[in-house]
Image (cartoon, rainbow, N blue to C red):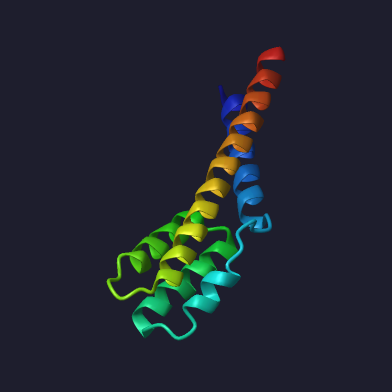
Length: 114
């Protein structure tokens, strides 16, 4: 049982490293340019979301992006940019989850073979 717990910890650390150190596949250029002259509160949420994306914190990014999307005074270009980036972040989350699931499955198979 201790061996299984140790392997689970190694997998978890590896997964966190993989998520945190991977290059973001999310293009934030259009988002940043469309909010360059936005109100400070909205721009703050977008800037925080971009920073979170670059750091690999997709959950934090989604929260900030959704907060920015809830603002009433957005232009059509800003709304579209937000929707595009939210979709990209959600795809990244799904891809990472699928990758981690495959890696965990392989690890469990390796354990069961021993």
